[in-house]
Amino acid sequence: MSYKTQLDKNNIPAHISIIMDGNGRWAKKQGLARIFGHRNAIKAVRNATEACAEIGVKYLTLYAFSTENWNRPKFEVDALMELLVNSLGKELPTLMKNNIKLATIGNTETLPKGCKKSLSETINKTNSNTGMTLILALSYSSRWEITNAIKSIINDVQHNKLKAEEFTENKFKNYLNTKDFPDPELMIRTSGEYRISNFLLWQSAYTELCFLDKLWPDFEKEDLYQAVLDYQSRERRFGKTSEQI
Image (cartoon, rainbow, N blue to C red; front, top):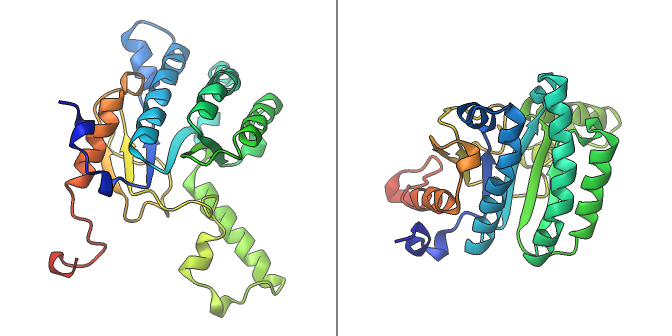
């Protein structure tokens, strides 16, 4: 029996975030170079995206490239950027067919010109889609995001656009890259690592975490359904007692 058939359709997380980890190790197990792991990960991205759209998830954020990833060998970074451009072009028909809107978070100004162009074109072409929003975290890290938010806040206070005494948690959210999206209710990380690697730190204060031993290129729709089913079995108290819920 598929995990999908066991899901409570009235308790689907509106926003799921995924740390797609294990591409390099997957390639190493096959005796291949790391880039082959990244290439084979495209199918997993498609599986996750389609599975989320099928069960009614409204937002899916994929941690595609962190600010720390720029420290990897140049040939790997170049190959990843080329893969991004090619994938955006190939997957556009699928996004349009499934009414999926593309968005991005992160310091995308640091991306190569070709990547920025392809990303911008795909975002514009899918802008009118009204189904699920697929958010790519590119050149992103939470510490970078929070640091930039603080800089903007200081600037607004100095220019009398914001009064310090009126500053609130909700106003802070408006300075984050994710201001237009709800916080994720479920975060999935593949590859058996138990950390969130500088990803959506502020936004994940009450996010349910799911760690899978499976390497990302092997991720299938059933893995997504199983993670959501596990999420549905948890009691989300947000600091309250069970009796208060």
